[in-house]
Image (cartoon, rainbow, N blue to C red; front, side, top):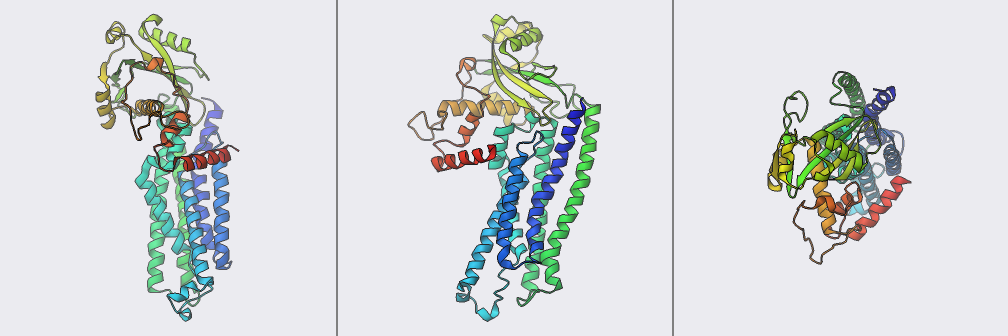
Length: 445
């Protein structure tokens, strides 16, 4: 294992802490700014922090050790929504619209709102929404299209996926806590005349103190995580390998050949179904169809004339030091596999679906099947621009794999994953597609 590999992963794990510090820090700064600047400047400061956070997030996507954008996206949306609410409240006060509902002598026109009373509930809302959506959130789906699933990104990808959810839940607890305490204090003790020390403590210092504690907590957590990861690599290279892997999914018409991985119950997915044809090689940036066919022949003993091989896609782990090449192998008959040392059993598509729903497949195989299904259905239903191939709206062709080795579709092209998300059957297709293209160009700029 090279020193560069360790340094890259150290930066990647440190990015977990840095993302939290910067993103949640952007939520804490408006509360502290309210101690020193007039209220009418707070929305401008909040918008400015939002723009800086967007720049930081987009720059992070270009790093080789980029991490999950989820916590940053939640904070960006929280800052944007909160700033808009502040502006609306300020307009209601400056235009004296509020006097239509409350006598002005009961209002403090210089303090139209307390920042945390807005930021706290908004952050709580977006955290709850993220928990409900799970991996169906737009930021998560874009990440999968751009980088692959967590399993395809290696050990660090799984860690980032897990920790991003942990950060969201932590922010949910913190934002809900400050929302409840600040609103209870506002309802029971706050006097809308001037701000005393107790007001400053609940509205300004409590959020900042909780943020400070979270910085220390996550710093300790990720230092421990890095220590575990370093030792995990050194002591169990089977989990985190520095090289290239080649996986073959074996099909005959609408059947797939799988075997249950046994004897490795000490690592994740050790007792689940997976493809029995997988090899490890020294690191390579590409593998030709001819080389893949030779590897499969060496593994099974089958001559090249007894099979058809096609490239599916390539996945790379977050360190950039390991990758996996996914291939599809089509056999002319089920009995062909009987003459090989490979052991397993054939499954129909309906049986495969049950295995998938019951979580009986390895995460890597589940990712491969998901990509296979998503690209296939998008290619059969829409063109490359997302327009329907059939006049029937929401028409879904039957999922079949017969002849897959002869299909004219590139499973490695992420455009088909985007078509599955943005197509003519989705509401506001043209508007969303235009917005998505501009957003992608801004990210790549």
